[in-house]
Length: 256
View 1 (cartoon, helix red, strand yellow):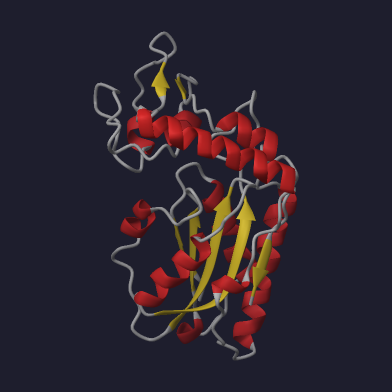
View 2 (tube, rainbow, N blue to C red):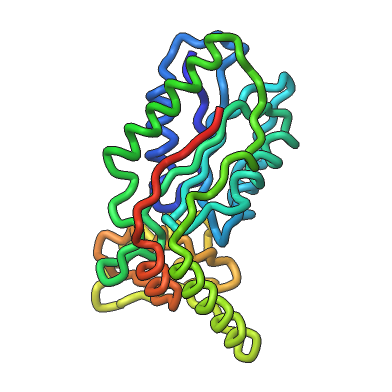
């Protein structure tokens, strides 16, 4: 039997990683050892609440093995992996492996590239290798649980971190005095009215008239990346500092 993939992937990067891990794990696992693969994106250093809602009905009653993975935009995954570990443990799963993989950031554009084009071939090969190692662990009868906190972020250059932290502090101060939430915009001259943005939005934030409910929008940019006419765009002050501060390539990493 094959493993079961559970992923929340608005812009597709996490889905690619989940499928690569599953390919690496292959088939012919006993029913009792077939693991669930959980893959979620990192939003602000955490597992997004909407991902928890996405998996709300998933439960296990037999300490089913779980393989955890988070995907992030080359800055840091911070608390997201431990969030995911807590989430699956509360639902009866036993985490036996955990990994962190880089995918193109949702805010990445041609002008401000952030992990542009990732996961690339090397990333997907690494995810398959991870899957093969998980398979070997299971076939050896080893279901020893892992602790996600043991997997630490790959450090970024100190100067880059300081520059980004200064930006975040300035942004928060500005928001405190004049709070404002940015959402993707629509170029009506380019829009063909195909409705793709409505269908791909995981938060159901885009109305039939193509307006966006700011209270529901999670800034995942699924509508931006998914628009076939490139009529959607998202102007965020975070794109430039993320692109400038976190251009140094980070590698996939995992624990078993």
